[in-house]
Image 1 (cartoon, rainbow, N blue to C red):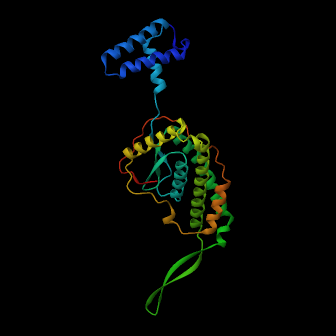
Image 2: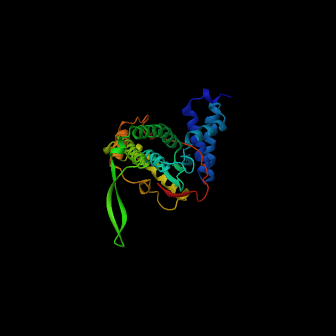
Image 3: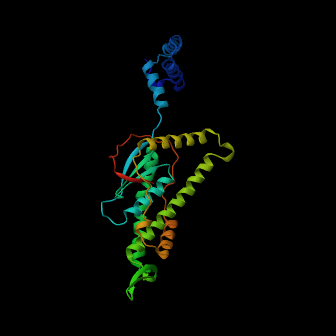
Length: 287
């Protein structure tokens, strides 16, 4: 019997296609006709039907979305929300949906495995750059020259009176604002790269091309998978609510985000993988 490596691929594909037609029809006579045709070709070419069937099954195996848990940090660690913001910004540009644990210690990523791989690789690099840049900013002491407007309450003649005052920016506030702006800028840069890649892959005049349809089908499949598997309650709102505002720190973080090395561009490939189960009730919102 001839081995698969010695058989022309087109013959294996022909025989496999006939087998698939035989297996998919409800008409007995059609099934027998397709199977007989496949057997004749197989006998003539000395191909095992099992080899042809395996060949066509391998060619037609399609990737499916998966769920993967992405560790962010230990409970109680400062800055986890900005770390999540960075991962979510990367994910948005790589066709990955996210749910966030209520403690911000992990993210549940939904997508095709190569897209999630891309997100993890980018996140590993950009997190190091974000933390290093914010450390340098804090150590430089530049944030100390900035002030933040706060509302203080005082008692005057037996009445509570509120007034606005300018107060020095605390180091933790400066760090959070720096990292928020860094993550936001990274998200903008990656979104621009994605738009550019898709525009090249799908020219405006070819909106109905095979590539455009493949991208659309991928989006629909991911949306359906996320809807069926996500148990998020509410929407994750990011770190803004828990941090004061420092315009100077945000400008510095934005500059650092513009200068950060992206390392790799978002990929639009066709990934595959297996589903990882998520504990019930582990998240507080989608991102």
